[in-house]
Length: 227
Image (cartoon, rainbow, N blue to C red; front, side, top):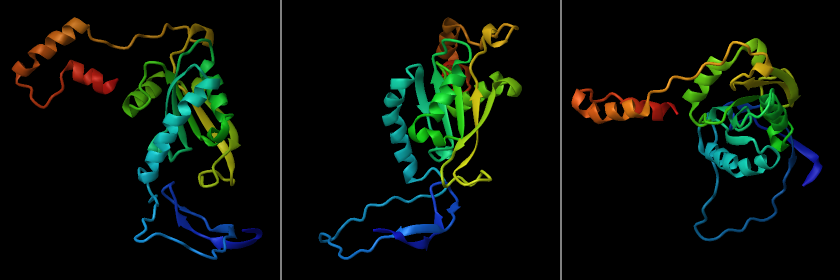
């Protein structure tokens, strides 16, 4: 491969769900090709997510979570949504220990390897299932004051990101959806989420089959789906 010899390549339908622009890339000269009888060509098909590569991203998420915890032990879990095409969104739950802790996590994520390309970082409290997007959305929409809880910054972006006005860099947003503390300027007293008494819930669940409400979820099932 001669790095000085290039050709225009593309556009390609990429994992972002859009056609990546044509660009100049080095030429690879193939002089021989060997194969077994009846070979199997290993490849993945990419496109509007979720496609095959979305499951590679999910595996990457699980593999790198323990490594992320080496420098961020407060991180409980992480989700990279398929709609975020690997690098556009990361949702993290954290054990909040001090004021502005969520912001510390955001900036640490943006300073960690390939996660520097993450365009949106959402931080929620521990106990929130980051893989349950309905629950995440509920806490973002309920807990966030846009004037207080959004962090706007600039930094590197993936080369395939077309949303920015500039190639390879642009703006990013961090969303602090954690409960706010008095030390963070919240003086009203944070409300408790609604929760049914476990004994009442168990009693209703026991009676549910007798109530003629087939097709509707009982209290425990609704709580399980939400959590």
